[in-house]
Image (cartoon, rainbow, N blue to C red):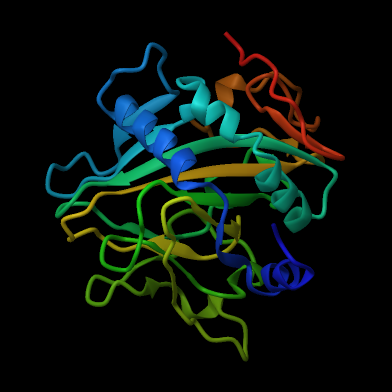
Length: 273
């Protein structure tokens, strides 16, 4: 799926623009299952479903661990082309899933996602080597709130949660100028993704999404992958920390952190009950 040039681009820039992963039929199945989840029609429940804003005028619906509620999403975690790509980007022979999430911005009133790095929200995971794969379930573009990134920002260090915010006037990143090393500039790059395509970003890359004021919904399915050397280090709480069963300092593993690549594709075992 990825060339050597793709891998080098990712390591230098902290993201990789969209690549085709699923056929129209495959993404249509996931899209159908997403709307069933959204409407409460699944027999099982995800870890969480909530409006991140709690505001009817600004809505971002977050569904955490859709894979726990629906086998289509569970099987997707093991997609061999996806897991091979992630293993190459992380330069690892073992890949597990930290968690997944769907973020849905409805038409006209979808809220923004502030500029941020992912890892400050995941301090229980060390070191910060995770990679996220963001799959569009519907076409995502600038008009309806596609991902935007700041290239090379994954090389600038880790900042506290919330310290890379948002400018209300032009939706650019609001940050302490000292965050940017000498000789670097903050360049905002939009990353449109068509339905069935996937883009990748490093857990320290600055990224965010603008509001959706279009007539089209914008559901995106992100899977956050971790390399096999990722350790559990107790810190402030996380939504799925109750699923962790290993001791502090140990490699994070377990049924709720599926092993999806080990020197090659992994056949999906039955999901945990």
